[in-house]
Image 1 (tube, rainbow, N blue to C red):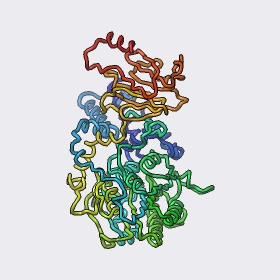
Image 2 (cartoon, helix red, strand yellow; image 1 turned 180 degrees about the vertical axis):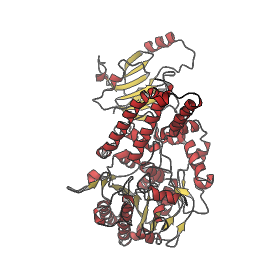
Image 3 (spheres, rainbow, N blue to C red; image 1 turned 60 degrees about the vertical axis):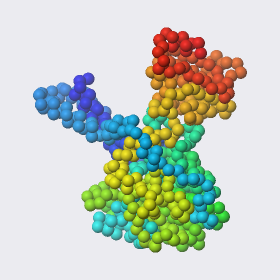
Image 4 (cartoon, helix red, strand yellow; image 1 turned 45 degrees about the vertical axis):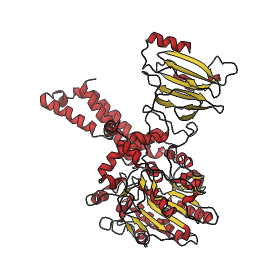
Length: 600
């Protein structure tokens, strides 16, 4: 294929991918796309996206058919000189402007950046109940899907959220909270752990909770971890599927005793949305559970997430009836208007409950709105002010600030967890990872304050990708070479500081044979040994000896190490440390290396 056809094909494919990502997630290809592709689509109703997928596929196939014969089209075939050059430049510019190109260019620009500033900023407060008051708060944290602070602006959205505007006068309102998470799971991690959610590439199914034993971000310390060791009962109730995007694994890995979603909470015959339950049903159940937990002696934290205002169109819960915003033509604004009513009713019920005096109620957006049908209005708002997250805190004790206090300390969702902890501990804990309490207006310096501008803050966060990836304790190309592995009696592989269940297949760097490039964790029926057949890749496979005939008598686990087309198969004693061949940084001929491998 000619260079012109290649460029045109790449342009079509990149634009098609961006289009698909935008219609499914509300944004072009980026961190959220990589994360979703890595974690899988479990819990997402793909039937709702089939029309978009079909249209995108059809567009791509037809367009590719055209560009294959592009050079035969008269108006293109006759291009010469500067006109042909200008056409090439146009295609290159189109490719570079897509989300895929921007994402990988960004990765290249921040590669190997110094991590010293991260290490200075990263703070973990001491764990334990000694940080809590004698009568600890109960916590209710309600994430509002994409319910950003822009909707409170009366000039652009007059009368859109009258109920929450009323309640904001009776709460601590944080007005300068910027995005650090970008998408829901990114926001969960940012607001609860104070770090950026970065996905290790080359590990397409690493989120399999049955194989990656240490859980979700095992190296991170989150608000759930602190509350768990302090005696809290942590529960989550959501309208969407609990497994979508790894939500269940994240929460269970960080202190939550109970995680329930659409499948666990939906009643027989109950109508649902493409994303799960309607919010009116969820909020009713959430309040009922709050009342039940309040009657017990142990402190609790109850988290939830709404879905009605999910991009691109939003939905209106049945309890809102014919409630509309304005002329009712914009479905997202109708959803926001309905949510304002339902959320305010929920907040009022919590605040009038007899246990509210020992409750901290947090209500705020998970992230700002992605691409949706209300974009013309949000773009109008963006011309005047920057878009930020909503965050209201209703303090049942109210000691520090008068009701209706507006806190304008510049911060991000990194700072939300530290802020919540400062309430729960009455100021004893004001730092969490990269987050600093926004209540401490004169003390702790937030990252946005330190780096002065939002652009500088976001640039610095990207530079720390290497540090964020290490919270997975997940071996990849950035880690030091592995010196070996072992398998314990439970069939758990210990390698490079991580733990996996057998069977496990590790693709290794062909040059050194010691650095893990990718980890493949398939189901039993997709046996990994098929990966070795006819393959010249450098790899390590660990499984039960029964999968490697002939079976070694009395041996339970075996491994195959393959390099330069040569495979070595051996059994492993339980707990035995199996060293891998030495790094070829020592001068050694290929023949000597093969001889060394065969002798092992």
